[in-house]
Amino acid sequence: MWSPRGRLGVGQIVTAGIAPSRVGYLASLVTSPISRRLAAITDSATLAVSARAAAMRAAGRPVIGFAVGEPDFPTPDHIIEAAQRAAANPRSHHYSPAAGLPELREAVVRKSQRDSGLECAVGNVTITVGAKGAVYGACVALLDEGDEVLVPAPYWVSYPDIVSLAGGVVRTVPATLASGYRVSVDDLEAARTPRTKMLIFCSPNNPSGAVYPRDEVIAIGRWAAHHGIWVLTDEIYEHLVYGDAVFSSMPVVAPETRERCIVVNSVAKTYAMTGWRVGWMVGPPEVAAAVGRLQSHSTSNVTNVSQFAALAALEGSMDSVWQMRVAFDRRRRLMRDLLQAIPGVDAPQPEGAFYFFPGVDPQLALPGRGARTALEVAQILLEAAEIAVVPGEAFGAPGSLRLSFALGDDDLVEGLQRWLALTGG
Ligand SMILES: Cc1ncc(COP(=O)(O)O)c(C=O)c1O
Image 1 (spheres, rainbow, N blue to C red):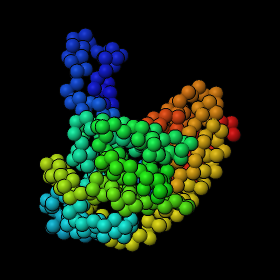
Image 2: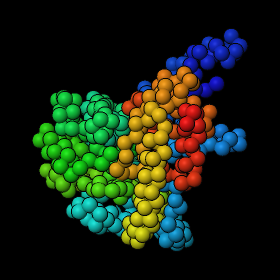
Image 3: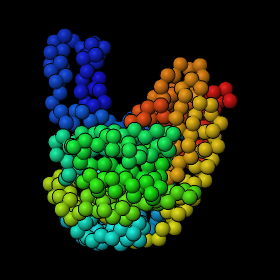
């Protein structure tokens, strides 16, 4: 009866067969009490697919999930043990600074220097509720009503909605499969207007797996600095690069961006800690302080136990990270071979993160089933092959699908064989 966005649609009033006396009251709900700003925000399509897949699993159907956006590995033991110790420490039981535990902020400073060569100080760092909290905080801190934000597409699902929530206007800049899903300075320049305040840059990229080479990061950074455009660079997949691909941090390789650059990161993907909800932003002190202020009036501190766990992650051994990367790389190669066997699927090899983002020809990829769009392909794959993939529409790139390789090798093989079987192969 309730639509996913919590509002009752007129069509639903009619089909629900509600008594006429109730219709007046219910119709008033059509003019929703939800603010215009929030009403414009949609549920994440990735979550919608996962929810449908979970419902099917709960009903006993053997769904294989290629829709997941998180490592399928457990959080390493030494991190869990640190959290257990923190839970027993009375210091964790009370409020702590809204900008983060001082020792975790210091650990982010050391980690930034160690991993990407970024020099910063504690005053540049604010600990947030995941990288998502950092993107949100930075957008609220920097955007005024009507400020335009360039968002290369395909993009991570939440960027446009976060920008809109913060009052900004999204200008998507399409990148194509042919361009390796990377935008050029010319593409960005064509989308720039006098209201352009920010560019959101993500490499390695979710959903495409693209990794921008160093010279392209430099060129984009110089262009942004030249025009006084802020760059929010999302480095959450920095350690998940494969083959010859090398991650480059924009404020390091293009130092001219530093005055207007926000680095976003989190322990989620690197240490298999998505549920712990710890991320951070590194940027000019004024912005870091503003995000801290925002948190002091909204969330307060990130859960102390999680912050201590994140501290153990950043300060501890990276062995588990490298093991996870080896497993992802193996699956990436396995999946490439399997995807190439499916007709109508054009699957470039991702260089980073843990996603394939193939273009699909619906008629070839699912012959005889009447699919006309990638969205319909995803729906049919879920119902007929019991495999969950995310349609490219969720990422501003219709015509494609996102398939994660954060799942076991056996499931991966079986899932893609089920798809191949639907093609008659
Ligand atoms: C590119 C990108 N940025 C940010 C996030 C959010 O990360 P977190 O779980 O740390 O909030 C994700 C999660 O999928 C992501 O893929």
